[in-house]
Image 1 (cartoon, rainbow, N blue to C red):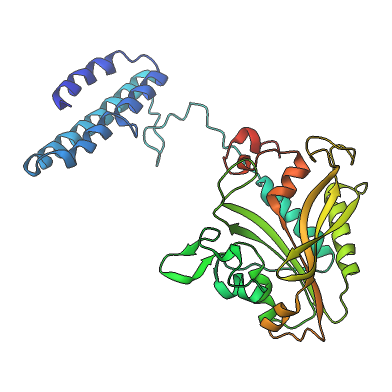
Image 2 (cartoon, rainbow, N blue to C red; image 1 turned 120 degrees about the vertical axis):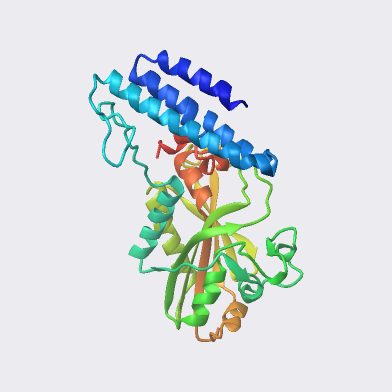
Length: 339
Protein backbone atom coordinates (compact mmCIF):
# COMPACT_ATOMS: atom_id res chain seq x y z
CA UNK A 1 0.00 0.00 0.00
CA UNK A 2 1.58 3.28 -1.22
CA UNK A 3 1.16 6.28 1.08
CA UNK A 4 1.90 8.73 -1.74
CA UNK A 5 -0.86 7.37 -3.97
CA UNK A 6 -3.22 7.54 -0.97
CA UNK A 7 -2.36 11.23 -0.51
CA UNK A 8 -3.20 11.89 -4.16
CA UNK A 9 -6.51 10.07 -3.88
CA UNK A 10 -7.22 11.88 -0.62
CA UNK A 11 -7.32 15.31 -2.27
CA UNK A 12 -9.61 14.07 -5.04
CA UNK A 13 -12.00 12.48 -2.58
CA UNK A 14 -12.27 15.54 -0.32
CA UNK A 15 -13.02 17.83 -3.27
CA UNK A 16 -15.95 15.64 -4.34
CA UNK A 17 -17.70 15.84 -0.96
CA UNK A 18 -20.89 17.90 -0.99
CA UNK A 19 -22.74 16.84 2.17
CA UNK A 20 -22.11 16.03 5.82
CA UNK A 21 -23.15 12.41 5.18
CA UNK A 22 -20.58 12.13 2.41
CA UNK A 23 -18.02 13.63 4.79
CA UNK A 24 -18.85 10.96 7.37
CA UNK A 25 -18.42 8.26 4.72
CA UNK A 26 -15.07 9.80 3.87
CA UNK A 27 -14.03 9.72 7.53
CA UNK A 28 -14.97 6.06 7.89
CA UNK A 29 -13.17 5.19 4.67
CA UNK A 30 -9.89 6.63 5.90
CA UNK A 31 -10.11 6.69 9.72
CA UNK A 32 -12.62 3.94 10.51
CA UNK A 33 -11.69 0.84 12.46
CA UNK A 34 -11.22 -1.01 9.17
CA UNK A 35 -10.22 2.09 7.20
CA UNK A 36 -7.16 2.85 5.13
CA UNK A 37 -5.10 4.31 7.99
CA UNK A 38 -5.83 1.25 10.11
CA UNK A 39 -4.61 -0.95 7.26
CA UNK A 40 -1.42 1.11 7.04
CA UNK A 41 -0.64 0.78 10.74
CA UNK A 42 -1.37 -2.91 10.52
CA UNK A 43 1.42 -3.27 7.96
CA UNK A 44 4.10 -1.91 10.31
CA UNK A 45 4.91 -5.23 12.06
CA UNK A 46 5.47 -6.87 8.65
CA UNK A 47 8.10 -4.37 7.53
CA UNK A 48 11.86 -4.68 8.09
CA UNK A 49 12.89 -3.11 11.38
CA UNK A 50 14.84 -0.31 9.73
CA UNK A 51 11.75 0.82 7.74
CA UNK A 52 9.15 0.68 10.53
CA UNK A 53 9.96 4.03 12.16
CA UNK A 54 9.80 6.08 8.98
CA UNK A 55 6.67 4.31 7.76
CA UNK A 56 4.94 4.89 11.10
CA UNK A 57 5.79 8.60 11.02
CA UNK A 58 4.38 8.93 7.51
CA UNK A 59 1.19 7.10 8.51
CA UNK A 60 0.71 9.45 11.50
CA UNK A 61 1.30 12.47 9.33
CA UNK A 62 -1.28 11.18 6.86
CA UNK A 63 -3.79 10.71 9.69
CA UNK A 64 -3.18 14.29 10.87
CA UNK A 65 -3.67 15.60 7.33
CA UNK A 66 -6.97 13.71 7.00
CA UNK A 67 -8.26 15.20 10.28
CA UNK A 68 -7.36 18.69 9.05
CA UNK A 69 -9.19 18.15 5.75
CA UNK A 70 -12.26 16.84 7.56
CA UNK A 71 -12.35 19.86 9.89
CA UNK A 72 -11.98 22.30 6.97
CA UNK A 73 -14.66 20.57 4.92
CA UNK A 74 -16.99 20.43 7.89
CA UNK A 75 -16.73 24.18 8.42
CA UNK A 76 -17.33 24.79 4.70
CA UNK A 77 -20.42 22.59 4.60
CA UNK A 78 -21.81 24.25 7.73
CA UNK A 79 -21.58 27.73 6.30
CA UNK A 80 -18.45 28.64 8.22
CA UNK A 81 -20.00 27.73 11.59
CA UNK A 82 -17.95 25.64 13.98
CA UNK A 83 -19.88 22.43 14.58
CA UNK A 84 -17.37 20.90 16.95
CA UNK A 85 -18.45 20.21 20.51
CA UNK A 86 -16.02 20.38 23.40
CA UNK A 87 -14.86 16.88 24.30
CA UNK A 88 -16.35 15.41 21.10
CA UNK A 89 -14.19 16.79 18.30
CA UNK A 90 -15.49 16.02 14.85
CA UNK A 91 -19.11 15.37 15.86
CA UNK A 92 -21.92 17.16 14.06
CA UNK A 93 -24.31 18.45 16.71
CA UNK A 94 -27.03 18.94 14.09
CA UNK A 95 -27.18 15.27 13.11
CA UNK A 96 -29.90 13.10 14.73
CA UNK A 97 -28.76 11.15 17.77
CA UNK A 98 -28.46 7.37 17.87
CA UNK A 99 -31.13 5.86 20.08
CA UNK A 100 -29.88 3.47 22.75
CA UNK A 101 -32.04 0.37 22.73
CA UNK A 102 -32.93 -0.88 26.19
CA UNK A 103 -32.43 -4.55 26.92
CA UNK A 104 -34.53 -6.80 29.12
CA UNK A 105 -34.16 -9.92 31.23
CA UNK A 106 -33.27 -13.13 29.37
CA UNK A 107 -36.15 -15.67 29.24
CA UNK A 108 -34.15 -18.25 31.23
CA UNK A 109 -33.48 -15.69 33.95
CA UNK A 110 -37.17 -14.82 33.97
CA UNK A 111 -38.08 -18.47 34.50
CA UNK A 112 -35.45 -18.89 37.24
CA UNK A 113 -36.76 -15.80 39.04
CA UNK A 114 -40.35 -17.02 38.71
CA UNK A 115 -39.55 -20.49 40.09
CA UNK A 116 -37.45 -19.12 42.96
CA UNK A 117 -40.23 -16.67 43.86
CA UNK A 118 -42.71 -19.55 44.12
CA UNK A 119 -40.49 -21.47 46.52
CA UNK A 120 -39.54 -18.45 48.62
CA UNK A 121 -43.26 -17.90 49.20
CA UNK A 122 -43.33 -21.47 50.53
CA UNK A 123 -40.57 -20.65 53.03
CA UNK A 124 -37.49 -21.74 51.07
CA UNK A 125 -34.23 -19.77 51.12
CA UNK A 126 -32.17 -19.25 47.95
CA UNK A 127 -28.57 -20.50 48.16
CA UNK A 128 -25.97 -20.58 45.39
CA UNK A 129 -22.70 -22.50 45.12
CA UNK A 130 -19.51 -22.67 43.04
CA UNK A 131 -19.52 -24.12 39.54
CA UNK A 132 -16.14 -25.82 40.16
CA UNK A 133 -16.78 -28.61 42.64
CA UNK A 134 -15.00 -31.41 44.46
CA UNK A 135 -15.59 -35.02 43.52
CA UNK A 136 -16.94 -35.63 47.03
CA UNK A 137 -19.63 -32.95 46.84
CA UNK A 138 -20.62 -33.82 43.27
CA UNK A 139 -20.66 -37.61 43.66
CA UNK A 140 -19.54 -39.32 46.87
CA UNK A 141 -21.57 -37.20 49.29
CA UNK A 142 -24.65 -37.82 47.14
CA UNK A 143 -24.31 -41.60 47.42
CA UNK A 144 -23.09 -41.95 43.82
CA UNK A 145 -20.66 -44.92 43.80
CA UNK A 146 -17.25 -44.99 42.09
CA UNK A 147 -18.49 -47.30 39.34
CA UNK A 148 -21.45 -45.08 38.43
CA UNK A 149 -21.36 -44.06 34.70
CA UNK A 150 -21.74 -40.36 35.53
CA UNK A 151 -18.29 -40.40 37.21
CA UNK A 152 -16.62 -41.45 33.98
CA UNK A 153 -14.47 -38.85 32.18
CA UNK A 154 -16.77 -39.13 29.16
CA UNK A 155 -19.73 -37.91 31.22
CA UNK A 156 -18.12 -35.21 33.40
CA UNK A 157 -15.82 -32.24 32.77
CA UNK A 158 -12.83 -32.97 35.02
CA UNK A 159 -10.28 -30.18 35.32
CA UNK A 160 -6.90 -30.95 33.79
CA UNK A 161 -4.21 -31.69 36.40
CA UNK A 162 -6.86 -31.58 39.14
CA UNK A 163 -8.47 -35.03 39.13
CA UNK A 164 -10.53 -34.27 42.23
CA UNK A 165 -12.03 -31.06 40.81
CA UNK A 166 -14.67 -30.80 38.09
CA UNK A 167 -17.36 -28.61 36.59
CA UNK A 168 -20.46 -29.57 38.55
CA UNK A 169 -22.84 -31.80 36.63
CA UNK A 170 -25.87 -30.79 38.72
CA UNK A 171 -26.76 -28.29 41.44
CA UNK A 172 -27.05 -31.03 44.10
CA UNK A 173 -23.51 -30.41 45.48
CA UNK A 174 -24.93 -27.29 47.12
CA UNK A 175 -27.22 -29.63 49.07
CA UNK A 176 -24.11 -31.27 50.53
CA UNK A 177 -22.48 -27.90 51.25
CA UNK A 178 -25.60 -26.53 52.94
CA UNK A 179 -26.22 -29.61 55.11
CA UNK A 180 -22.56 -29.64 56.22
CA UNK A 181 -22.56 -25.94 57.17
CA UNK A 182 -26.10 -25.51 58.56
CA UNK A 183 -28.21 -27.36 61.08
CA UNK A 184 -31.76 -28.56 60.37
CA UNK A 185 -34.48 -27.51 59.86
CA UNK A 186 -33.53 -26.58 56.28
CA UNK A 187 -35.64 -25.46 53.32
CA UNK A 188 -33.38 -24.41 50.45
CA UNK A 189 -33.68 -23.88 46.70
CA UNK A 190 -30.54 -23.72 44.52
CA UNK A 191 -30.48 -22.20 41.02
CA UNK A 192 -27.37 -22.32 38.83
CA UNK A 193 -25.46 -23.43 35.74
CA UNK A 194 -24.31 -27.03 35.32
CA UNK A 195 -22.09 -28.74 32.77
CA UNK A 196 -22.13 -32.11 31.00
CA UNK A 197 -20.23 -33.18 27.86
CA UNK A 198 -23.40 -33.79 25.83
CA UNK A 199 -23.51 -33.36 22.06
CA UNK A 200 -25.44 -30.17 21.29
CA UNK A 201 -28.78 -30.71 19.55
CA UNK A 202 -32.37 -29.52 19.83
CA UNK A 203 -32.78 -30.96 23.33
CA UNK A 204 -29.21 -31.11 24.73
CA UNK A 205 -26.48 -28.61 25.61
CA UNK A 206 -23.08 -28.94 27.27
CA UNK A 207 -24.12 -26.10 29.60
CA UNK A 208 -27.61 -25.61 30.97
CA UNK A 209 -29.41 -24.49 34.13
CA UNK A 210 -30.94 -26.44 37.00
CA UNK A 211 -32.88 -25.66 40.14
CA UNK A 212 -32.40 -28.00 43.12
CA UNK A 213 -34.62 -27.86 46.17
CA UNK A 214 -34.66 -29.77 49.45
CA UNK A 215 -36.15 -29.78 52.93
CA UNK A 216 -34.72 -31.44 56.07
CA UNK A 217 -36.58 -31.69 59.38
CA UNK A 218 -37.72 -34.19 61.98
CA UNK A 219 -41.02 -35.25 60.42
CA UNK A 220 -40.87 -34.80 56.64
CA UNK A 221 -43.00 -37.21 54.60
CA UNK A 222 -43.43 -38.04 50.91
CA UNK A 223 -46.85 -36.39 51.09
CA UNK A 224 -45.06 -33.10 51.93
CA UNK A 225 -43.03 -33.48 48.75
CA UNK A 226 -46.17 -34.06 46.70
CA UNK A 227 -47.88 -31.01 48.17
CA UNK A 228 -44.91 -28.69 47.52
CA UNK A 229 -44.45 -29.88 43.92
CA UNK A 230 -48.17 -29.64 43.14
CA UNK A 231 -48.16 -26.04 44.35
CA UNK A 232 -45.12 -25.30 42.18
CA UNK A 233 -46.50 -27.00 39.04
CA UNK A 234 -49.87 -25.27 39.22
CA UNK A 235 -48.22 -21.88 39.81
CA UNK A 236 -46.11 -22.30 36.66
CA UNK A 237 -48.43 -24.20 34.30
CA UNK A 238 -51.93 -23.37 35.57
CA UNK A 239 -54.44 -24.79 38.02
CA UNK A 240 -56.09 -27.12 35.50
CA UNK A 241 -53.10 -29.45 35.09
CA UNK A 242 -52.93 -32.93 36.56
CA UNK A 243 -49.83 -34.52 38.12
CA UNK A 244 -48.50 -38.03 38.49
CA UNK A 245 -45.50 -39.57 40.23
CA UNK A 246 -43.72 -42.51 38.57
CA UNK A 247 -41.27 -44.75 40.49
CA UNK A 248 -37.68 -44.13 39.45
CA UNK A 249 -34.12 -44.53 40.70
CA UNK A 250 -31.73 -41.82 41.85
CA UNK A 251 -28.69 -42.68 44.02
CA UNK A 252 -29.33 -39.77 46.38
CA UNK A 253 -33.04 -40.36 47.09
CA UNK A 254 -35.07 -43.38 48.26
CA UNK A 255 -37.84 -43.76 47.31
CA UNK A 256 -37.46 -41.76 44.09
CA UNK A 257 -39.99 -40.54 41.56
CA UNK A 258 -40.22 -38.80 38.21
CA UNK A 259 -42.92 -36.12 38.15
CA UNK A 260 -45.14 -35.63 35.10
CA UNK A 261 -47.84 -33.09 34.35
CA UNK A 262 -50.71 -33.44 31.91
CA UNK A 263 -49.75 -31.97 28.54
CA UNK A 264 -50.40 -28.23 28.56
CA UNK A 265 -50.96 -28.28 24.78
CA UNK A 266 -53.50 -31.08 24.35
CA UNK A 267 -54.78 -31.18 27.96
CA UNK A 268 -53.81 -34.83 28.28
CA UNK A 269 -55.50 -36.05 25.07
CA UNK A 270 -52.23 -36.78 23.24
CA UNK A 271 -50.33 -34.69 20.69
CA UNK A 272 -46.91 -34.41 19.01
CA UNK A 273 -45.51 -32.37 21.93
CA UNK A 274 -46.18 -35.13 24.49
CA UNK A 275 -45.49 -38.00 22.09
CA UNK A 276 -49.20 -38.92 22.04
CA UNK A 277 -48.95 -39.92 25.71
CA UNK A 278 -50.79 -36.98 27.24
CA UNK A 279 -48.04 -36.44 29.86
CA UNK A 280 -44.89 -34.29 30.07
CA UNK A 281 -41.95 -35.11 32.33
CA UNK A 282 -40.90 -32.03 34.32
CA UNK A 283 -38.58 -33.05 37.19
CA UNK A 284 -37.10 -35.75 39.42
CA UNK A 285 -37.66 -36.06 43.15
CA UNK A 286 -37.57 -38.32 46.20
CA UNK A 287 -36.83 -38.69 49.89
CA UNK A 288 -33.20 -37.94 50.76
CA UNK A 289 -31.23 -41.18 51.08
CA UNK A 290 -29.96 -42.01 54.61
CA UNK A 291 -26.43 -42.39 53.23
CA UNK A 292 -26.49 -38.74 52.13
CA UNK A 293 -27.36 -37.71 55.69
CA UNK A 294 -24.52 -39.87 57.04
CA UNK A 295 -22.01 -38.22 54.67
CA UNK A 296 -22.88 -34.74 56.03
CA UNK A 297 -23.13 -35.71 59.70
CA UNK A 298 -26.93 -35.64 60.07
CA UNK A 299 -28.60 -38.47 61.99
CA UNK A 300 -30.95 -40.28 59.54
CA UNK A 301 -32.85 -41.81 62.46
CA UNK A 302 -33.78 -38.35 63.72
CA UNK A 303 -34.17 -36.39 60.49
CA UNK A 304 -35.88 -37.01 57.16
CA UNK A 305 -36.13 -34.85 54.09
CA UNK A 306 -37.01 -34.65 50.42
CA UNK A 307 -35.23 -33.26 47.38
CA UNK A 308 -36.17 -32.39 43.81
CA UNK A 309 -34.38 -31.08 40.75
CA UNK A 310 -35.45 -29.67 37.42
CA UNK A 311 -33.91 -28.34 34.22
CA UNK A 312 -34.76 -24.67 33.75
CA UNK A 313 -34.51 -24.90 29.96
CA UNK A 314 -37.03 -27.77 29.94
CA UNK A 315 -39.49 -25.81 32.08
CA UNK A 316 -39.08 -22.76 29.82
CA UNK A 317 -39.52 -24.86 26.66
CA UNK A 318 -42.74 -26.39 28.00
CA UNK A 319 -44.04 -23.10 29.33
CA UNK A 320 -43.46 -21.16 26.09
CA UNK A 321 -43.76 -23.94 23.49
CA UNK A 322 -40.10 -23.77 22.39
CA UNK A 323 -38.80 -26.79 20.47
CA UNK A 324 -35.04 -26.12 20.35
CA UNK A 325 -32.82 -25.48 23.39
CA UNK A 326 -30.18 -23.80 21.21
CA UNK A 327 -32.42 -20.78 20.73
CA UNK A 328 -31.72 -19.72 24.33
CA UNK A 329 -27.99 -19.32 23.67
CA UNK A 330 -27.78 -17.96 20.10
CA UNK A 331 -28.51 -14.34 21.13
CA UNK A 332 -30.91 -13.87 18.22
CA UNK A 333 -32.85 -10.73 19.10
CA UNK A 334 -35.82 -11.88 17.01
CA UNK A 335 -36.22 -14.72 19.49
CA UNK A 336 -35.30 -12.90 22.71
CA UNK A 337 -37.61 -9.93 22.07
CA UNK A 338 -40.64 -12.22 22.36
CA UNK A 339 -40.21 -12.55 26.12
